[in-house]
Amino acid sequence: MAATKSTKRHMSKAERQQARERAQERAQAALDRLGEGVRAVYDSERWESWLRSLSRFYDYSLGNTILIAMQMPTATHVASFRSWKRDFNRYVRKGERGIEILVPMLVKDKDEDADEERRRLVGFRVGHVFDVSQTDGEPLPTLVDEVAGDVERYAAILDAVRAVSAYPVEFVSDLPEGTNGFFRRGELVAIREGMSEGQTVKTALHELAHSRLHDGDPMAEGMPDRAMREVQAESVAYAVSAALGLDTSGYSFGYVASWAVGKTDEEMRACLQVVRDAAKAMVEDLQAAMTA
Image (tube, rainbow, N blue to C red; front, side, top):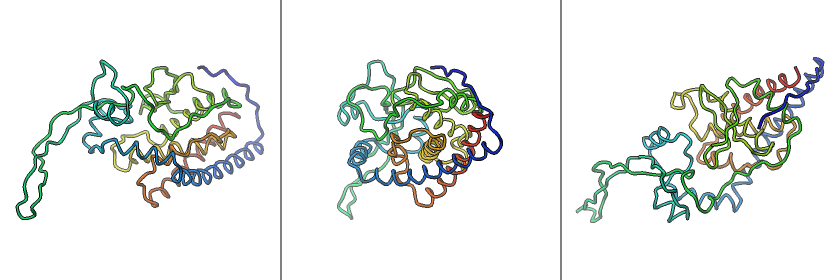
């Protein structure tokens, strides 16, 4: 899906300033709507359904999280061969290679004083899990909706994203199931080929936000955890979409809500400041690229 070159109209200095101010006002209004939308998600039946599904996935240790990321960086939801079949009515495809993790080996000890049995760790063994992209079957409950429809100034926006990105922006066709794009640190921004214009622009803005905010070692001190990185990138994408005058009525607040689980009020306030600053800078850069 290649964007065609768009005709640019030269704007006066006063017009550019007015356009920046209007865009920033739309971005701030979008951030206010985002907070309201996320709170509404928490009260929905869809949220409860998603949480029930999430509760069936095992809580992996930091060590196993690192092992999974090393073997399959694109993994999103992992479970054992048996769990996929029993809990989700999904089946691991023939020939798929499992992701190795360490499974604790526990033995029962009798506590004579308390008259109860306790479990004692005696070591670890190698186990295997599989990502959802390695399975087929019933779809998982989701909070993320695709953005449909065409986008006015579609080619101009994609040209601007390419112009302001520190890395090449490429369309790819072989992304794992459920992945619309990714940012590979130090290399590129990738977008799934063949999506609607609306979803393509949203994904491009999301991954561009990642490339600007999270272009560093994810394990480095001061770098937000994965959940907070997703909240930041998606929130920036939403605010920038609104600032550019794009239709955000079909936007899924559930995506942000799902990653915000367990975050404190202080963490979310700090996140909001990061989002505001990043959205402001991105809007200004994109507008400059589109009107130069």
